[in-house]
Length: 532
Image 1 (cartoon, helix red, strand yellow):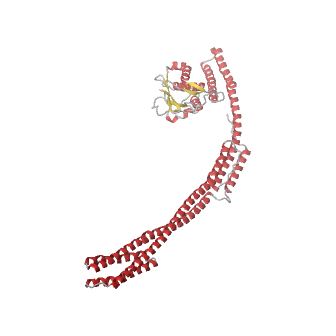
Image 2: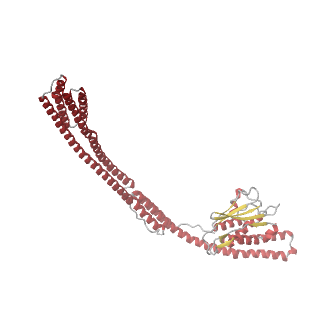
Image 3: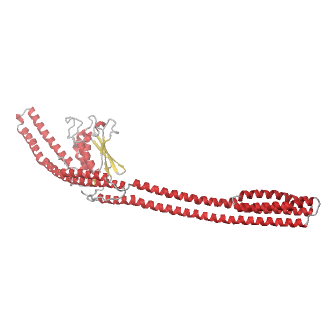
């Protein structure tokens, strides 16, 4: 007997008020506060601008470095080498002319002619290298003019005079020497200017390298600073508020349901905090409601205990009297009663006894799990033996065989477990076949952290459609006149197994149209070895 428990009207009103407060708070969250999305967007924009500026500066510095390297490697260094080659080709010309004038040997003209060709080539190469530099270009032209003057005023006249067999005059020799010295001086000036330009280019290269290094160091420092800023922002915007929210939630989870959450941070985290606060308020009201319901449940349990007492004493006493006086009536007035009267008396006595049995089984069903139940190690071999002994008369009358395999020791209540084995075995005997004696096998198998038991018989079986229905109290699959009983036996078995932390079911896979296999599980250990 249970009463419907209703939530007090004041608590329901408080809950509705809390919901309204939460809705208002949720709508007003973050007004005047930047959301995490906006903060991250701003951070990415700033980082992008800094990255763009750094990329431009780095590109400019790198371009300056590449340009300085290009000038140094591709122009001035080759120009200095080509100037040396130019002086060498002019010396070849001068040596060839001098040798031909002295010896009149035509072989000396070959170095002269080769030198003229090489000199022209070197001048062209130098023009390609140093034309961007006006002073160097002018100096190169001066070198070319001096070379042309030497050839015109000395080399060509001297070669012509030597070819005709004449003697080169001292004046012409002096003029040639003077003009060639002028070539040497002009090339020296050109070489000095090239070296000066090379030194200036080298200074620019060093400056460009320094700029690249500075930009690189600045970039590394900027990246480190950006990482530090990102970590600080993540800590301030996400990690610290989340940690604060977690700490506040732990306070509530530890039992401080009256502790109001106070969190600051981005809008999204404030929304989460508001939801957690709403949950806290709901939990507080729910706990108040649970406390009220627990009080009501305690009152209902007291009424149930009182009803059980009445059922076990006050209700059974009139039934015993009815059965006793009906039997006395039959015994004393047997000679005066006809067969129909005796039948009526038998009906009355049978009804009273069945009523007593039903009350006793209801009491047993209601007491499963009640305070006072003793739990401890239970040897199921002894439990099964006790259950079989209680069914000794029934087993003898039906020629039944109960085969019990080696069973383990579990933690539980010995009385309830004995009732479980007795009910299952009795059920198998009751629903036996009429053409063969019943055979019942009880086995156990270890599976991970639980034992799986089976009670298998060769009886009439249970249709798969009714495999779950048989465990519902008062549910019967057969008429009472065919198979007597109250419909409580298997329901009591389920309640006992549930109380011990297991489950029970009819294994429809192994029936195959003959017999029934009921399986149930019990934990290997459930941590309740002490008496409770």
